[in-house]
Length: 130
Figure 1 (cartoon, rainbow, N blue to C red):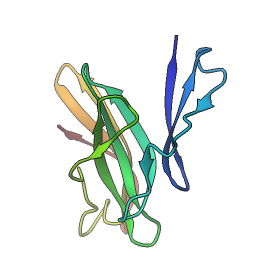
Figure 2: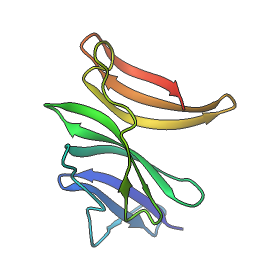
Figure 3: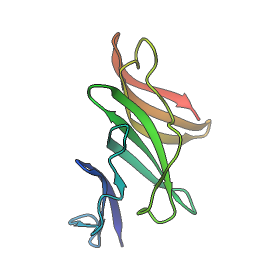
Figure 4: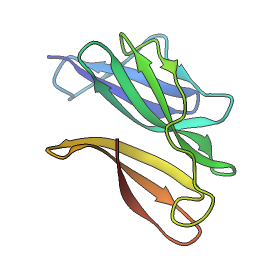
């Protein structure tokens, strides 16, 4: 089967495809599939197939101005439409500098968003119901 991979690079997010179960990948000829944004670089994408489209949470920003959590959707995993930002850094505390490394987890109690954050008071992981 095929294994799909979305990865961060200097110009934005790239796409690669494996036909051997992930042992080797071939980059898409028209990378980046989601170019660097006017509000910063992109990193730590998490892409999911939602039954009829792909969805992606991705950190957007830079080390100077901080990172926020962005959102994009695609029908084919190649052409992405960026939506509204999911989360912005807080004004104080545990997440006032960076938000990134988000992952959605579904449990019996519902869907949760796990994320990494950096703040002036502490750093760590948190969760929030979706």
